[in-house]
Image (cartoon, rainbow over all chains, first blue to last red):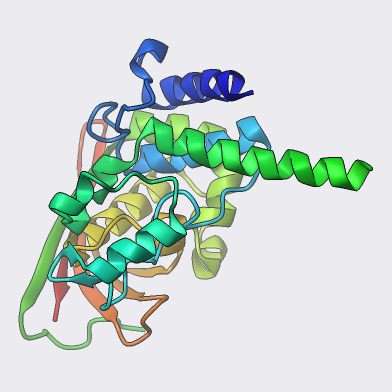
Length: 136
Length: 128
């Protein structure tokens, strides 16, 4: 199941970002390594929704208005409360490296392929367990 | 409604964005309906019954430039929908965005579009 998801994500990202499938490794950052820009993030969200037949709500995969809160961001830096909020709301995002220099404008560098894979595995697990229950 | 009524006191931020029309064309050919539902807000849906490549490129770069000028993290589709753009004469536009989380935070700004070959761009300035 995980292999199949990874393969589909590789195809989706390679097609959206115009890169080779071999470039799509779990550790790759969408922005820093694969050159994704803002329009690409939207393209990726829409393509993943179509490929996996699910809706990715705003703020579910990438932080939406989460950080537009004075408690969470001060002078361009994510506060400890903000980091805790990110961890709680976006458990798929790996923040260990980011916490060393939590500049809000650098957060997008930490959106990785692994983050997408974790998110999809979780969503698809829930979806299949829900349909199992519905069928039984 | 005029969003920026008087010249405000000081410049808070500047943002610039640029997009290639060929990338926009490819994007719209796949996601036009999603764009209407998830990127445009209600008034934009009314204003752009037929969303052209140029309309979308301008809206997108204006909103993206505005985000950068705000100095906020990328806020995704919800953030884009929350912005209001008012086209003024020529390539001038005005913008307003009210934070969905903290309603007291309102960003106001203005900017200009520019074009060069396949590229469409926007620069935005936010005033305090």
